[in-house]
Image 1 (cartoon, rainbow, N blue to C red):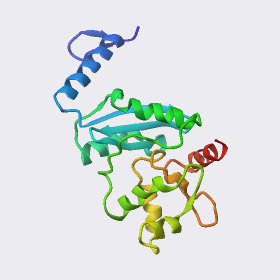
Image 2 (image 1 turned 135 degrees about the horizontal axis):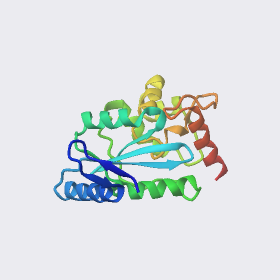
Image 3 (image 1 turned 90 degrees about the vertical axis):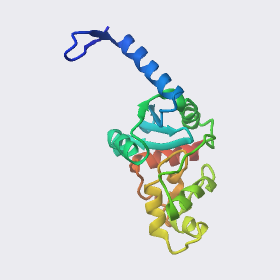
Length: 200
C-alpha cells in the first residue's frame, strides 16, 4: 500500500483514501456544475491519448508528443481553470477508441465541442468526417470541398491544429502524390492509422 504524507499536517493517507477523496471531489464538482473540463488518459496503439470533454462534448484529443501537461494548461486558459481528472465523462469516447483500434468501428458517434476553432479552420475540420473510412483526400481536394480551392496550405494548418484528431480524421488528408504528409501525432502515428483502416 502506498502512502502519502500531507505536508505540515503529519496525516498519512493511502492510495485508496486518495482515490475516494478524488471521486468525491469529481462528484461534488459535477453536481454543482463546476466541472468545466473533464479529462482522462487512454492507452492504445498510438500511445497515450489525452481525452478532454466539456459538458457539450469532446473538446480535445492529444498525443503524448503534444505534451499533455501543456495541453491541460492551454485548456485551463482557453476554456476554464476548472479542469479535473474525471474519467467517467469520457467513458463513451474511450470505448469507441477501443472499438476503432480493434477494427470494429468505422465512425465515431460522440458529441464534439469545436469551440477551440473558428473561421476557415473550423470549416475544414467539420468536413473531415466526410472522408470515408479507409479513404484519403488530398489537401487540395479538402480545400476545394471547403470552398477555398487555393487555400491548400491553410488546410494543412487546420489539420495540424485539429483539436480532436482520430475522432475527426485529419490522418486521412494526404499530399497530392499520395504520401502521408505531416501529422500532429507524428509520422509513425499517421501511418499506423492509415494502415489500420486499409487492413480492416
